[in-house]
Amino acid sequence: MSFTYQNLQSEIVAASSDDQFAQAVLEGLSRNPKRLPSWLIYDDRGSEIFTEITQLVGYHPAQCEFEIFEQQKQVITDILPKDAFRVIELGSGDGQKTHILLKHLIQSKLTFDYVPIDISEGAIKDLVDFLKSRFSQSSMSVTGLAADYFDGLQVIREYPNRRNIVLFLGSTIGNMELPAAEQFVGKLQQSLKPGDYVMIGFDLMKHPKTLYAAYNDSTGVFERFNLNLLDVLNRKLGANFSKDHFVQQGHYNPKSHAVESYIYSTRKQSVFIEALEKEFFFEAWEAMQSEHSYKYTQSEIESLAENSGYRIVTNLFDEHHHFVDSIWEVKQ
Image 1 (cartoon, rainbow, N blue to C red):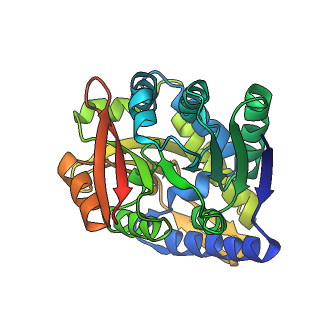
Image 2 (cartoon, rainbow, N blue to C red):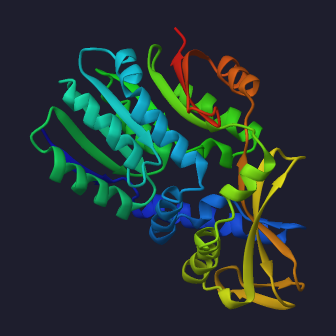
């Protein structure tokens, strides 16, 4: 079986991505209050720090999803076709949770392709190398794609001979506000065939103190993750942010139904961004939102699936019903 890697981010696509990055920063820092999208954080270093977050005992989205994969991997396996199929993972990162499922599928003597897609080239390379070291003699083929999700899916559509299950894990969908989530799952549905499956991780609404504790660890990993955004802006756009003059804090906002992370300026200061040829001003203790993690109700998940052309096959919960991996089928 083959273990390969492709970088679909051509110079033209990369230039377009850089323009999109710069535009998002310009728009976000020009708002009042300031707000930047969380995807800006995920360079290779940001992906590495997020892996640390998923290993925190108090970060329940990751711990609950690990439990689901460990306890219900056979349920997932039973849903999949017995002939050759394809497992596609959007935003695979280091693939820790998925490794549990992949190992079980191999032990079940199933033949399948695994296609991890991630914007981080380093994460994809490391994942393909890791899987090759563990499963080179297995019935699994791996094709890692460093790409935007839908660019990667477009390439896969050129090989329509296998049924797909798309994994979108870790409550990544919670980083989107509801209208954007509806647009995303609708676009995903149009990228697949009737009978294909998607498995989406949703963090469920729960006690606000539980949410606060999950996003404010005592070791400061979340703060390092959010402040990495400033390093990314300095490197990519020639900004002169000083991390010594900013701190981070997460809060649950009952109006937005989301945990929101903010980077606070500890003093009155200005930051110049060379690529934008513009100076931005911060008042002392002014907040800039850097993350948004929406918490779903079960009825919202059901409506999202039904309104976007899917049928819910099953919902897989952790023991405390803090999290759900919802498996949907694209309607005929």
